[in-house]
Amino acid sequence: MVKSELMKYSCPLGKAMSALGSKWKPIIVLVIQDRKLRFGELAVRINVISRKVLTDQLKEMQADGLVIREEFKELPPRVEYSLTEKGLALLPILYLLEEWETKYHVYDPEKEKDCKTLLEEKNVKKAVV
Amino acid sequence: MVKSELMKYSCPLGKAMSALGSKWKPIIVLVIQDRKLRFGELAVRINVISRKVLTDQLKEMQADGLVIREEFKELPPRVEYSLTEKGLALLPILYLLEEWETKYHVYDPEKEKDCKTLLEEKNVKKAVV
DNA sequence: CTGTATCCCCGTAGATACTG
DNA sequence: CAGTATCTACGGGGATACAG
Image 1 (cartoon, rainbow over the protein chains, first blue to last red):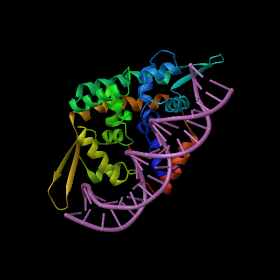
Image 2 (cartoon, rainbow over the protein chains, first blue to last red):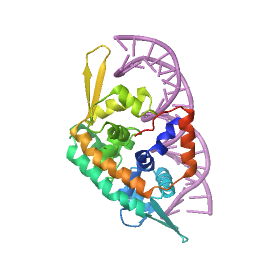
Image 3 (cartoon, chains in turn orange, blue, red, yellow):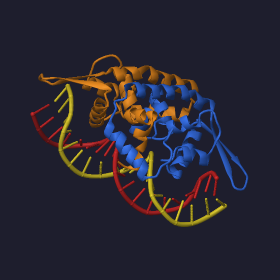
Image 4 (spheres, rainbow over the protein chains, first blue to last red):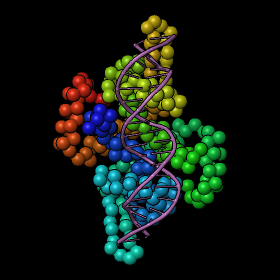
């Protein structure tokens, strides 16, 4: 273990952030909610994430006890993801974060425009979350 | 703007996480609380962060409207950091995250041991937060 | 005391092609 | 359908030395 990892184990918030501090995990939690979603459904709803990264994130979240992975031995294969109790307990906190952002958001027209343009360029049909 | 940045502007949670999703920002908010702290005090309290990174993070947080930087033209120089209203509003949410982690924490003796060893090796006197 | 200036490592994440 | 396998690029973060 290197010094830089110390934070992960030395305080509760450090641990919490190491479990959900990545780029996509909070989004994934918010998208799953109290449902079961198939891998493909997740990929569609979070359309700006590559499948490889989505797989990686889900694996880590499974290891951290945030999500449950159910694999059905069918053809074609089907895999369903849902939140654990721990993951579900995170939902209200994430809602608070959304509220916080919405309340203190500073409107930036240029960024909004960039975003719109990009959505069209990439032909993305559905915004994330 | 590249596709990977899309998330930052396309949903509230994405924006929120881009403002505090870094490795140190939540910790910094939690350490400052409702006080004014000098740069050196921050560095001591979060002793596993390098001064360069601390400076960088504080700059970004200032730009995001999370912290206030007051520079006193003295010799030796003195700089005090405090939270904005926006930053303060984040505190209760971070406390909830701590509670969440504490409640669902899975005790890992090996990691705890590694951490203790490292603290001694690095001669770190004070744990973060 | 409070930063800058460099240099560098390593992990995250993206693109693309392939598999059971 | 739900992933793997590879390769690559980028940038956050760290160590160290120096500056005002």
